[in-house]
Image (cartoon, rainbow, N blue to C red):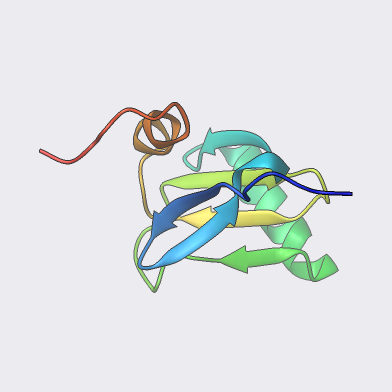
Length: 87
């Protein structure tokens, strides 16, 4: 069985996530997202990719892992859609 090339999403600070595993990209500002982060941390499913910066995006994967990013959700979405965000 052959697989296509694995597409990675740059979530900042040289961290990447497999695009095919992402279910949602959500803003980190809401109370439900804070609760989701705490629940994932207790369950050992939290991956912090912020490099100590403010969390701006929460990525949910198909394995129910929660990934934190300091990149804005709109920027991550543009990267997934292949729009250049470099100006």
